[in-house]
Image (cartoon, rainbow, N blue to C red; front, side, top):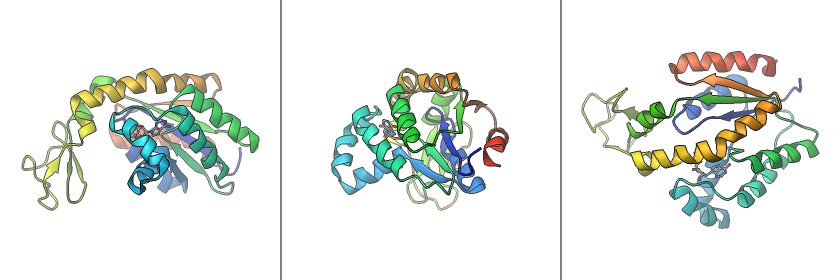
Length: 221
Ligand code: AMP
């Protein structure tokens, strides 16, 4: 096994990918490379990439492959070879998966494990459409499973809670449809290559975390 593993984390919106990615980065010293973060930064900076990506992101649609594949090539060229990497948020289509593999291959590298967190869609809709966030400190609550003590008010600092536009039920359903149609097939791509590790995400976060730790064992040593 290569000393500096390349690990990919996949899962639909609401699968707990953000929380678990944080754990993997902290526990295994992985460099976190997330296309969503890069795109949000590009939008905030008003770069040509950001201007092009914004309308797709606002609609909950995927940014077109030709834009993302260019971004993936740049990212791969800059991957450290002396530190492990966690790829997050890409590839999201088969074409991106092929481009990623080809670009890695040119550098003599490959993906060591694909951690695929699965959660039934009715649970995802409930999780995401119940999510409210503090405007001040960004603490997330869930009105169904983890409500604040006083409705609409943050327990920590009394800040107002709000719901992200793309967490409202219609947007959530659209994001899940996009995932099912375009990104779920990517798991199949990796299954046929023997790198897919299915993870049951419909369990408490600490149980999911333990499953990810088990999956990391052969990779991280
Ligand atoms: P994320 O934070 O990963 O959920 O990404 C936020 C948004 O950025 C997505 O809803 C897409 O519009 C866009 N995005 C991020 N990564 C990709 C990708 N690999 N391919 C296409 N669009 C992407």
